[in-house]
Length: 165
Image 1 (spheres, helix red, strand yellow):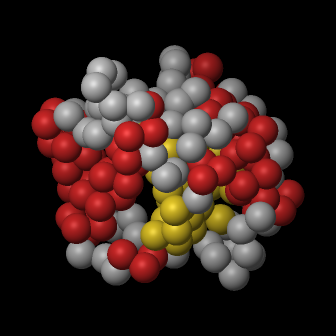
Image 2 (cartoon, rainbow, N blue to C red):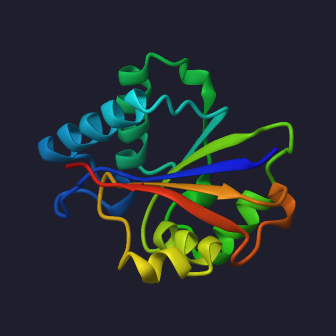
């Protein structure tokens, strides 16, 4: 059985009065997250597990998402390693998933998430479709053709990229 890796970049969050980790979603960011949440709900996307960065803006993104989907909040695991995680950190993170889990949503940050899409895809889909990265509140769906522990370059395919519009 194939594995499904969903990636969601947090909603818009202005720089300014808070430290980076404490930045909150803007009003537009909240609306965008609700828009993308509705699109994902309509498509029937329900991950077995949601892994979320510990930054305030990703926590808010997860909260809006779970409220919109009416899913249990205990489905979410907050993990410090996802805060501004590099590509290398994300690869190791994905490889740790238990193979009993078939689908995982990671809510995190750029550039790591965008680089993970390109890495998993081996850049073929990305080059063909002009993918330049995930904007805020954007979503990517990758299907792995190997177990989580074997995740490597080019061993997944991009099934879908969604923007908040």
